[in-house]
Length: 543
Image (tube, rainbow, N blue to C red):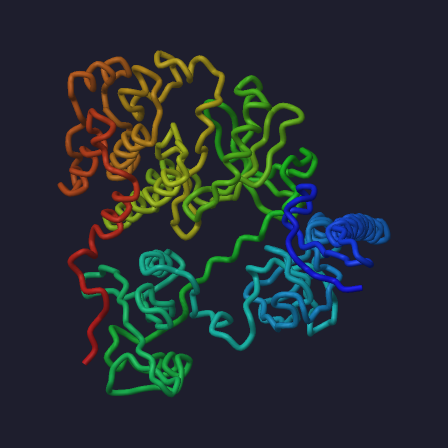
């Protein structure tokens, strides 16, 4: 018998693209497409065993969870969602590395691993924001927040190193109340990959404080220098040298910049939580639609809780909007943690901001003493947050100083984005209503109910007025009706006292009658960020 291979196009369509064999038996030729049928059967058998093995693997995970008993919420997520949880340790990403605690952590769940600052741990598993680790001090194992640790033997463990921080944010950190002249930090260069910069808080003879930046240049042998007159074997040696004398810098280095404590990751499955898990501690304020409290979640995590008066909005409408809101995560937006909607009043659980609303802070003893550069910086921070909302094609609808919060280190974050759309109170939703924020609302939104990111831009212009006047009410002495009619006639608020002309020009650009003529938040962020630095040198020059 002989076998000759060729492509047969005269049999069933399934076999047309598959090689067949002509088998010669005696004097007759017959076409037998046995190979495609064999491949088809092999595929079916293979698919059956693949599905079966996946089902058995999932069943194995469930059995393991049953054996484990009640566990930390993130344990279930790790096991059910991670296909390599049974793979050898050496095959898992980042496993086996040694890390050092940057901050202390107190275990909040039975499966958590508590630790002190400086404690060394070995990573056993990596799962998103929560890693499983083993303490090298007491050999205990458990889950740790990944942003509380840094890999050993790297600059990330140093108090003076700030990873992933911009030049502008470095200035904000150094000028925070917790720091003094001589505070410093090392950061990665934004413009030169693999290079670093030294930023120092300074003060001149008139008492004006600023931040000076110095470029650190690297040598081929691993050394570094700021001034060519003296080089160092590494950055740590350079830091020690400038602690002893300024040697060409604006001043001696005193102490590293105060590093804000990392925010503990929220439990991934803790979205709709029990009201019993919230312990109200201190009432912070009350507004049109409810109260704001400082509280603790599970007696461990400090949070802010906004309670909504019954009837403010339906639970269904709120959950729909909240599911979108929780996806918006940015350093300039207040983070939404969880909700309570099963029983009224509805609870909104967010991160806690120590200095409360920007409106109240501007009127406080500390806020009313802020200098113009800090007020401009507040404006730039808010523009940055709104630029993110703009990029995500979202709308705030109620942007004003009362809906911006201030942290302990004087960082601004936008709150309550999106809530205005689902409020069912007629006094708020109707333009004639007593609660409707007429003085912050764009004409097209008042007249036609047209809310866009450009109507948010109009509100931002009014917010700038609030900031530069330390929280004064816009359109002073005018009723809401007078404001509406005056704006229709082209009236705009005059330039406030002590307001730079350049800033007032920005406000006027926000109040252009045609929405399309108003600027973008992305553009205004860059303008406000460079309000004072556009004409300054990027770095201090060294001899």
